[in-house]
Image (tube, each protein chain N blue to C red):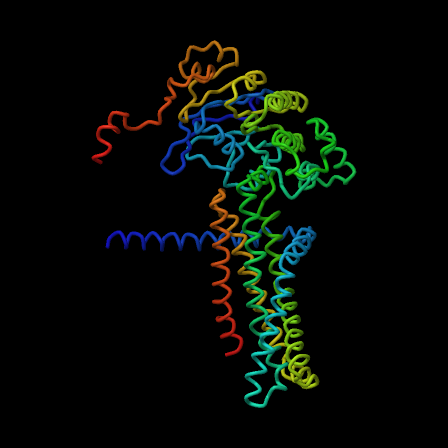
Length: 267
Length: 258
């Protein structure tokens, strides 16, 4: 099966508020695929649906040939052992050191001797450049470093799928470049598949093999980063060139200014 | 009028739904506790942690409650010329009622709020979600060890409270007021029954341990993942756990001593 993850006709809503409608996506093995779109477009929801943390109202998600079923805890826990996820702010366990955070999945899921766990943890930390920060607590490291530790923890069990939720958000340009480089390098070194949810065009286009653009719960464009840069689609153009107004309006939808100024007082 | 009925209906529906959800979580928690037999260290670490949280406040409170019992008991018993029964009064008050109840109330305020805030902040910081994505059940890894630690720590803390309280009563009654030391201890020895008084007190404190610790953990686990949500959950822990302790105390007292 060439695709590690496939999404078929996916519909999801929070109560009556639709988030995703009729999504169809493929994530080929060994590739870095980006899911881009503005805030609230449903990007993170896709990751949570793939991880089985949310259940779709309609549609199907297939991971490694098996349908994702959030109600089947045994199946989901089995599937999640093949997945790694980097949360937006790292989600490190604040009561554990950097070393213990990375060792956590290894201790939970393997019966490896402590010496081997130590070697694996140090190798993972070395890969993200933080071997010498092993003894520090999450409160003692910067946001960018926390993100890298979380990345080391996410790949501790050499997962087939690595999901990144806004890996570049709030990082300085150096950390952003380091994070982008790491995502590509780790993906290729581990032979895994990566899904990067981001709205950072520059860094994402540098590392992605394929890009999906989401708007209002629908895929509005998809293709390689080069195709997206050359796209005439108004939404893609607005997003890629960071234009203030366009298909995504500057003003929150509602009454016009005239209506508010001239009728607002009487209401 | 219709608005009031609608609000009442919504409140009833939400209350029933909350109770149902809490019950389901409680059974899921019990189901997730089996794994702790293989890793008892998770529980012992938490007993150490939770016990340390509450030990000082419980020991100091026990001492002062013992002081007050010594004083009040002496003045009351003195009217009837029975001050030699002071030791018995102090011991029975502590082992039957004050030890378990005051310990549970202090535990709710000290360790309970801390547990709610800890779990609520773990949820807000996506630590519980991260754990789920690592195929680790947070109920088994985080909630269950803290729950059983609370249940085990409560009777130990109540015993410490009662023991320190007896010393407090002794200091005030015997050393300061001058009640006969022999009478103080012998009346206590003769009047306190191991099963009827001490064992019932221990049963009460175990039940309170279940109620307070589960309330604290559930409130944290179900908190809105925002600073305001965690603050509200912490307040709810104190209110619900305290009321539950007082209500359960009445129920258990009626069952045990009627």
